[in-house]
Image (cartoon, rainbow, N blue to C red; front, side):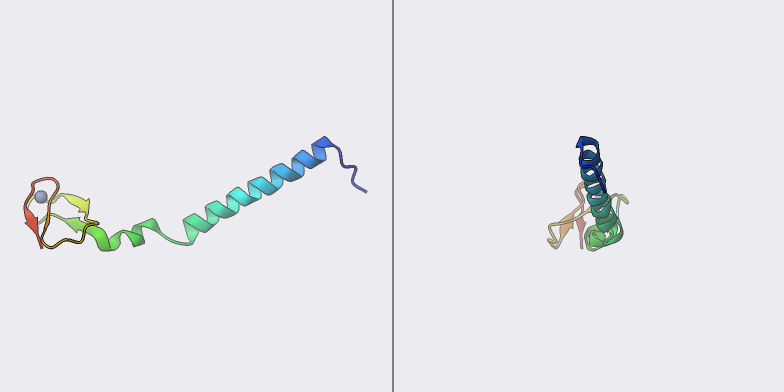
Length: 71
Ligand SMILES: [Zn+2]
């Protein structure tokens, strides 16, 4: 029989909270890749070679580095 004193209760609470944090970490790191979500917005300037994310989806977009128009 388990004697429910403060140390046992704190050990159970800490184990459950650590398991919760680890499960959230596994869910967010292995479930989906953040690089795959941003792949559609990834652009490279044809003139200066600057790599950037274009979330506006405007055509023609402009390079944030040199300001040239991109298709
Ligand atoms: Zn550029």
